[in-house]
Length: 118
Length: 110
Image 1 (cartoon, each protein chain N blue to C red):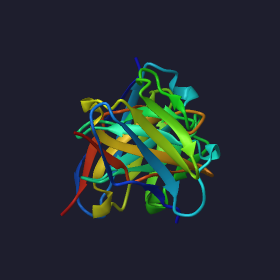
Image 2 (cartoon, chains in turn red, orange):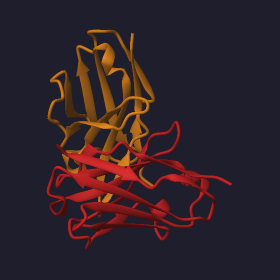
Image 3 (tube, one colour):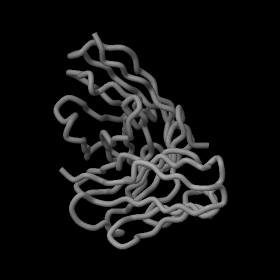
């Protein structure tokens, strides 16, 4: 059974940093692209970032470029999102998801809430 | 900035049919955008319904179907049931590693 479990969310002040983790199981982690998707309270879904199987390619939505970094550790079956210079508008539930070769997400974690507030 | 458009809301009667669409603020949606659809109920993670325009994800009932209608991607629910009451999101692949979600459609079954 495929499982994705996010952790690391919490309350952080504007300008602060946070590192999210996503631990995966039930599939060959190193053979899959992975994604982060977020959802602000009461709002829709927003794709945030993607990372290739070996970490050699990374893509970001414009609003987080230069502030967020997606990474992975295939030895630990873990995906990460380092978030710096956080803003109030980054407040959201952050989901990790497995991305398939034809550009869709087939498995999702349950999400971790990040709140940016003073 | 490309915007993916969806109807804000739809209401459908139990047993009825509803078609949600997914368009572009500029241009037409084709299979080259690899449209996919996701269902989400409050407090839950999204669930994948349709990918590659018209392929149902594992375990998705066949009352859900995807297509291209005119210049938009479409999700049709045929024979709506009470537990289809959810938010539905489409996402399009824009190329160069970039995806854009639509704002979602809230479907009410009553």
